[in-house]
Amino acid sequence: MTYCVAFLLEKGLVFASDSRTNAGVDYISSYSKLHVFQPAEDRLFVIMAAGNLGTTQAVLNRIRRDIDRHHEAATERADMKPAADGPACPSDGSPAAATPGASGAPPTLLTARYLFEAADYIGKLSVDVQRQFSTSLREAGATGEASFILGGQIAGEKHGLYLIYPQGNAVMATAETPFLQIGESKYGKPPLDYIGHSRLSLEDAARLCLVSQIITRRANLTVGPPFEIALVPANELRVSRRVKLEKECDEVNRSMEVWTRTMQEGLQRLPRFAWEQDPL
Image 1 (cartoon, rainbow, N blue to C red):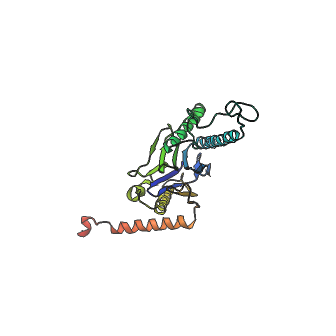
Image 2: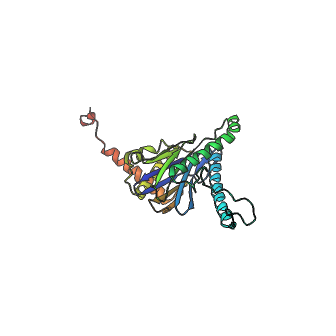
Image 3: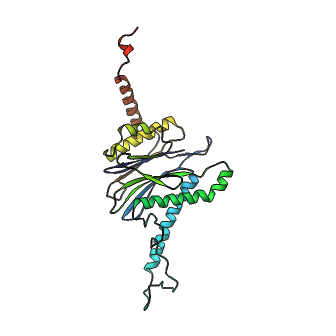
């Protein structure tokens, strides 16, 4: 299992994930679940993944393949020589390659005009991979389901955040529901619900997401460090900060200590029961 959380803020986006994967108690390892794609200067995407590791890696590989194919096709078009009485053709005389993103071609991360188109693209890739291996996985008693969080910005559009379900459809974060979670989400949700909102600074949201990760790790052994955190300021099309926090690093230890102490102090400040005012 895994745990990923992302925040949609007025000032940008914050992403946090653990790095633990497991295929049983005797096979636990670490894989990064936070992936940054900037296929062109006018767009930036951050993808976090949870679920079947084979499915998530296959989807990420297909995303990279499609970006590479687009760049290769662009290079081929640049090598074309204009024909005297017709359309441009390659110097070797072979038919010109189709332009990725042309009319009728499905959007990719490089050609999507809107963020929701990029979410649809990732959802379709995920469904295709799951269908490809569904029979063999079902026979083995396993599932190929995977979920993704996609966040980022395309120049000219607002930054945004989407949760992509295993079925391929997606929902977006809003100012009223500013955070999205995938994986083992229930343990780390309370602090996000109580004090999380879209007007937080990037740094405060990052601290809150780290606390959410620490709480989840404490409650569920399938979630664990290193924790990865990335900050994306609005309208800058870049990752301004990205850190990997190991198990015993100062940020993790001090955050756990401060949060625990604050909870203990809060307990002592809670209203007394009526019988405590007049004990037997």
